[in-house]
Amino acid sequence: MNTLLAYFGENMGAIGMRLLEHVVIVGAAMAAAVAVGVGIGLLLARESAGKIRGVAFYLLGLGQTIPSLAILALAVGVLGIGAFPAIVALFLYALLPIARNTYAGIQGVPEETVDAARGLGMTPGEILRQVELPLAAPMIIGGIRTATVVAISAGTLAYLIGAGGLGDFIFTGIALFKPEAMLAGAIPTALLAIGADWGLGKLMDQFSIYD
Image (tube, rainbow, N blue to C red; front, side):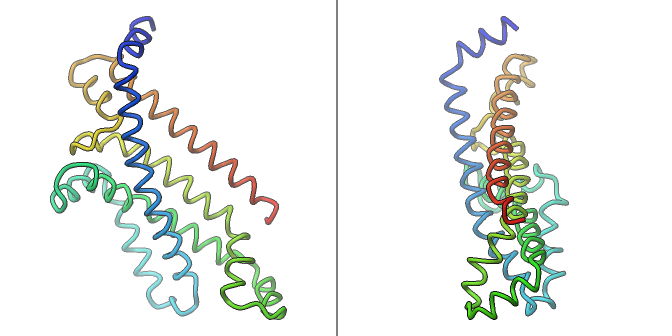
């Protein structure tokens, strides 16, 4: 324990820098994944999407069946090394749970509620914004929550393609047989994932009044 505390003390600046890199990579990937994933989920929830829904979810599911390291390797092959391919890889990995939960949330809105909104003269856009999205919000946020925790964990692999992040300490510790270095990356990663999970869980609770 003393060795670990001493290592943290000596490398606090470097750990903070790698933590910031990690947050930026995951944050950029998740921002794009939320925007695209929610949009896809909303489109697939419409009746007109019936013919392409199965194919769309199959294609999105490919990102989950391929190991995260393999997705990073594919991204490097196309985009080179650095932060951008890491962001693209994490974006692809996060799409499915967000799109799937958005679809499930919208599908779970009671039809009689939507019919009542139509009866009040609300437009489709108003129904989406004022009825469907608030009711589906807990499910949508649940998908974002799952995707975020997975992205934080998978983000440690970004170091392998020159993107930095907390994986720097983890893989350096493994290579040099230094447990304190490995823990200097693993502990902040775990705390970051726990914090994100807790924060998004609290956000879900704010919408529970609509359940």
